[in-house]
Length: 223
Image 1 (cartoon, one colour):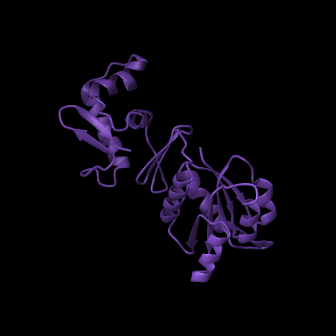
Image 2 (cartoon, one colour):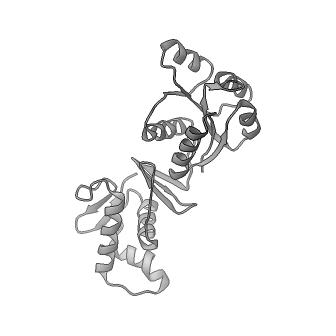
Image 3 (cartoon, helix red, strand yellow):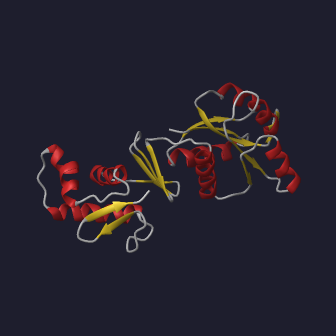
């Protein structure tokens, strides 16, 4: 799992950032100053999200110090949108730059892109478009919002994700989701559960983007 350190002195904004990232399946550590950020920084940190203006210095200074010993990616947050400010941030080691205010969905996309570029990939965290499945926590989020799935719905989704790009037949679903507990169910039960799952994860169940029907064979999920 990716570990993200947030360095932001505004308590409410810091909390909002943490909630958004945790719902998306990330492990988050928060800091409100350069001193706290330095104390929390360790080898497990996968990404830094740093406000440029902090009470005991600037995020630029923190990034410059970090760069002496680590290449962990850094996303700067700032209210300044001037060209010179952005150039200075990249000169001091930034990997990305976000100007406040910004939608949390946009933040998640920037985080995903920076981690992907840095080679950070958690084998237990599946992401596709706006869908995030955390296999460690058994949690599913779409566009940063936690989805409430039943145990069967989650098991079906996990089966499809673990077989991404392959066709999963209804027989496989029965054998790997229900028969493992020696529970006999009819094929219609699979259809009903699958339809409920689609309604919860698909933005438009009539035009699915995550779980697609392979006519006459089964279902597939492309990641």
